[in-house]
Image 1 (cartoon, one colour):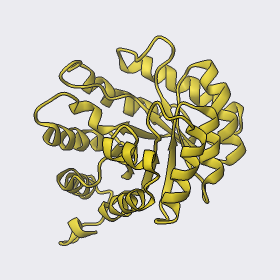
Image 2 (spheres, rainbow, N blue to C red):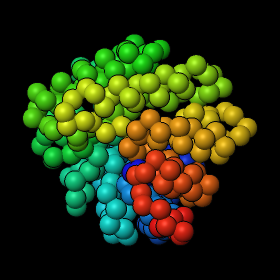
Image 3 (cartoon, rainbow, N blue to C red):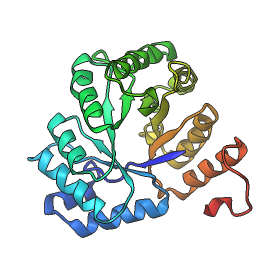
Length: 258
C-alpha cells in the first residue's frame, strides 16, 4: 500500500504556525519524521486563508525537498498555487485533487498532461458526494474519460470513493468498499484507488481503532493508497499485517520492521 502522509497541512495548528513564521527547520523535521515512519508520499497543503498561496506552496515544496527525497502530492484548490507547487518539485508529483465538476477537470487535467503528473480524483460533482456505489462509479468514469481525452494513462489516476464519518453516515462504509471494487473494472490499465482514511473516525471517541479496522477492510477490497498519519504505529502495523495475509508481501518474522 502507498502511504500518503496527511501531516504537512496548514490545517494543523503547528504547521500553520510554521508557515506563518517560515520555520524551515520545523517543516523539514516533520517531513523527515513522516518518511521515517513509513510515508511514501508527502501531501503538501498550505491550509486555508493564506495571503500568498502560490508563494507559500513554492516555499513548502522547496523546503521539504531539501530534507527528503519522497514523492510529493500537491494539495490545493487554487490552480495557480497548484502549478507553483508542481513547477517547484524536482520529480513527478500527484495532483490532489480534481472532482467530476467540469470547471475543475478543465483546469487540472491540462496540468496533469503538461507535467506528466498522477492525479487524485474525488468522486463527487457540484451536487456533492453521492449516496451509493454506482453513482460514485459513474463520477469515476467521467474522470477516466477526461483522462483518456488528454492522453493520460488511466493507471495514473487515484480514484477516491470519499470516506464519510461513521458517526454521521454509518451506511456509507460498505458503499465505499463496493465502489472500490467497481473502480478497478472501469478501465484498462486499471486506475489506482485512494482514501482519506481518518475521515471515517471524525468526531468519534475511538479514532485509532476505527481507522485501523477500516483500513484492513479497505485493503481486502483492493485499496492501493491511503492519505493517513504514518506516525500512528498501530495503523501502520495493521497495514503491514494485512499485506501479508492478502499475499501482497512475502512473510518474514520481522515483517513489522520492513
